[in-house]
Length: 72
Length: 320
Image (cartoon, rainbow over all chains, first blue to last red):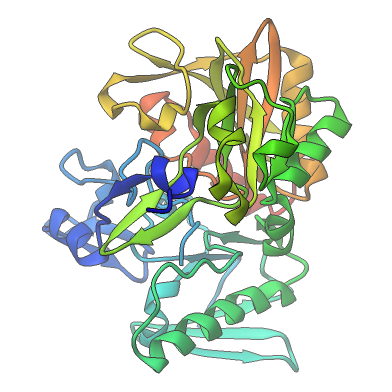
């Protein structure tokens, strides 16, 4: 059998979180289109400063939080 | 009608952008955020006769003009990397046409861009960054690019670093994969006929090395050293468990600090996330990411990066 390229062999494979899964994790919060940030539904405070909000979440599950705008 | 001074181009789930919009909201600065994944919910009209962009969001109208617009925060990719083939023709056109639309917003030439997509496009090329970094005085690791290990003259027993030229993201079945920086032995490259499939960056293995992330915003440079349970990390630190990592603020020597801000400037950027390695009492430039992440450093290292980005967006100029 043909050996795979070294990059393919050494790649880190993970299950990507999709937008609806991220939304599910952040139940109780919603995006405010006029403020341009996510808020907690019951007090309209910014979600990023709420300790229960998952915050910037990486899709490739490493420490560099947030999607670094590399993909689509 | 709200005439805005700051335009933010992002996507709805990019929570990093929230830090900026919240700062701008606190400062009372007129801004608007448009998300790439929400275009169909907006009403958009761009008139070239007066170079005005009208955006209707949730019944509210925003107007962007070359005269009033101070800055643009561009949180979007410049290279199109399609990992998934959209099933529907509409999806394909949605992606290509809106991506082009946001690129065309470069008609707002008077604004400060963080970062300008044209410059990001150029600066994202790793070999080009290394070349520029070397030219301005950075020490860089010995670097080759090849698809044929036999041409390289590598020592079979020595260790080398291999990395991708472009972000190593791809799809395997229903899962996604990412290629981090890897450490390999020379014989893994010289005896690998499959290497010819694609170009690979091969670099000198710096060991032991201390990873340093320098985040540049305008002229300001923040640096953190990256440790795993108090010790430096062999290989790609991003593979270390989150809870074991420490990010500790450090002061870089003045000349290295200056090289970081000079590099970002030289590449025509206002922001850059630079990876450095400290090895053998020298600082090596590894790469700069014009679209690099920074939000995790707010809590982990106490850096107020978001506040300075917001201030820079408000001022619309980088003081020299």
